[in-house]
Length: 137
Picture 1 (tube, helix red, strand yellow):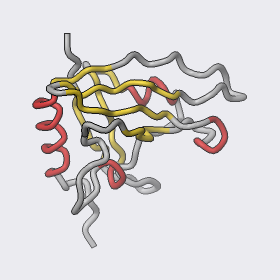
Picture 2 (cartoon, rainbow, N blue to C red):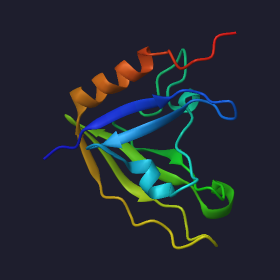
Picture 3 (cartoon, rainbow, N blue to C red):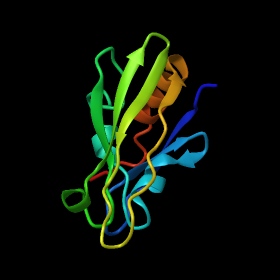
């Protein structure tokens, strides 16, 4: 069975920039991995204006940073994943999880995920086209 990706942008707040939630099969995979107080990627980083998203999958495997715990990635490490297109499948694999912190044990490893490449590309194109989260000067 293939996994399903949904990309949601949380609008900017008074103290933070717009952020992205990556829902896989209805679950926020980043929130589970970075724990309470951590954060997922900023929208400007994964949905940049004028250039393709780093979430785009190509034939060459590429490691992406998707989040960090509350104690920051410099302290406990970042949540990263390898993204690669394998024919009609986009695979997220080889997760690197934040380490244990003084606040408690690190998260459980995430499983390898497989997405239908057409549906993945369509969801990413939809998210890239929706710029409603951008702050207008």
